Image (cartoon, rainbow, N blue to C red; front, side, top):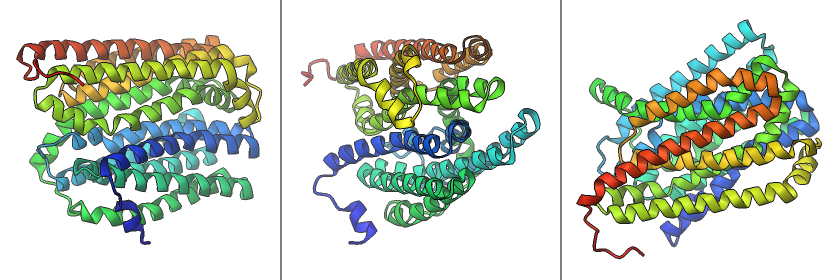
Length: 430
């Protein structure tokens, strides 16, 4: 069976989209934990610490590459902008992403004393994320046309190949730079034979750089980009502070404790992807009561998952994580609880960010994320230097709680404002 047939064949597109989106979310969430486990066990905490900060920087710059357009593009049900225009702007943002990565590494070498190895690893991991950012515009078009299943199958296959290639190279060579390079090469090859190849049926690969459209897209997408970029900065602010003031081993230990929050974050992003088009349609049809019900139901799901995560953290998480990483983290149980709470709050913030994008209130995100990021910038050094890992996780949880609360208020105030004109006042919500 050909790759194309494997990715596109299905008996039920809707069911396949949800199933593969869930699988993709799980595999994506496994990337960093699995790679960190292998690095910690094979190469030790120092290399794990280097990878941890490289992954944090790459994830931050990923949002520059994507420029926040996935949600905007996927929920553009009226096709206000054409795919060639989305494609053109993505080429520009991806180029900007790698320029920013190079600038960061040069700054790290000159100011922070990064070694050549650390410089190379950060650039290469950013290269892996560059492939993700570029494929995202193709996947966004697939989702826009109702084929999220195709996009998530292709993405899932690429993640699996990245994990396998990186881990095998580390095990056989013990060389972090070489493993990162192999991962980039494998990611490019898999992208070409899956997303790019199959995407020809959905996408017109002739980018448009029409100045007027590029300007409008840059302005339209800026609040989304900046909010997601700042959200990732807020999430990783403790890592940047540890990188500046402490050492690689502390970085690795923080990464181990922080892993549950990272997994929750990744899963949240992918779980919310399938709702974009359906929520956008309900909102555009003026069915406000139905929309409010969907939002409240999703809040209940997030709350339930957070409680479940806390139960896991209180019972089996510490021994399992200690066994997986080969490092005793039993002394960090309280920090783990705080991290899980912060991860739950992050899931709420990601969800309300998604809803605010759908209802086109995304300009308010600039002020919300800007204020929270400023707080993170001002507080991170104090908390990390004085309280170490506990200070880092506590700051993270507080910032995420504040952020999700403000986004929730913005969302429900807008819904309440639209209620008088709702067209589904007499429709029974099922």
